[in-house]
Length: 196
Ligand code: SF4
Image (cartoon, rainbow, N blue to C red; front, side, top):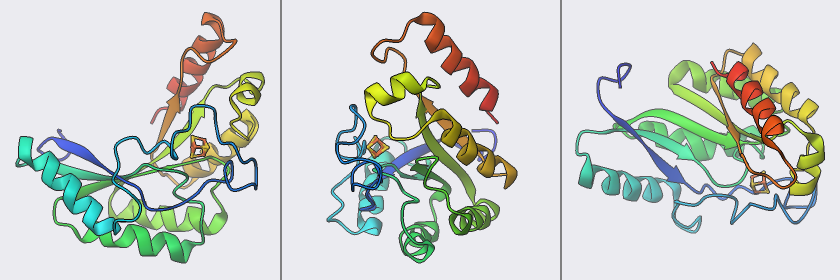
């Protein structure tokens, strides 16, 4: 609010990516909580990205006419593609006059050097946040939920974003199978320490 001088709302987008935990690279079943790439509020990926965004902006502006928009690439792993593909999908949304920020949801193991360089460029041009799904710091739980990467791999991706000065949001889940209060607190404290 203070930064933009007005409220900013997220407009969720399904940009038609996939995920290494679904396409067979790391797994095929996805995380146990994954539902269609976890794009719970998006339109279909059969609709062009700019049309999805225009639709979501219209919905937000019905209730909040002056709101700024955070274009939120929510479904699947939104850096899991060559940089040229990322540019095709991300660049058009920055042309919308109401878009003041960009959120890109992805996995910590989908951050190649080329992708990191491009994200760094984006970060210099707009208010970017890369959203990483950690869920838990415990590898035993990660196996149960089928996350498909270790906590060490998460930290490698996370710190590579930090080194580039890219703002990062860490998603966690409390109440995962087999976790007690102490384990959940360990995850929460880790995510809190990682906060910008
Ligand atoms: S990382 Fe995200 S998109 Fe991939 S399987 Fe897990 S919840 Fe689904």
